[in-house]
Amino acid sequence: AIVGWSAYTKVKTGSGLPNGPLGLLGAVEGVSYLTVLAIAVVFGLQFLDRGYLPGPLPGDQCFG
Image (cartoon, rainbow, N blue to C red):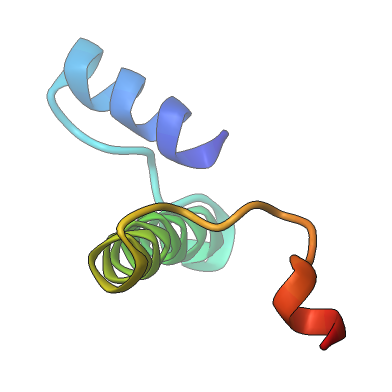
């Protein structure tokens, strides 16, 4: 939600979210973008390794 809000604000005003009190909103915005980047990297590496994205539930290989 933060990344969407930030992207919308960036497109509409040309700048990201305001820093907010104690710079907290700016910090949360930065951490949110890093989290989205990390998710994309992990999914990309799983896709390259397995050829597909594993499902959210454990498969047969987990239960031996």
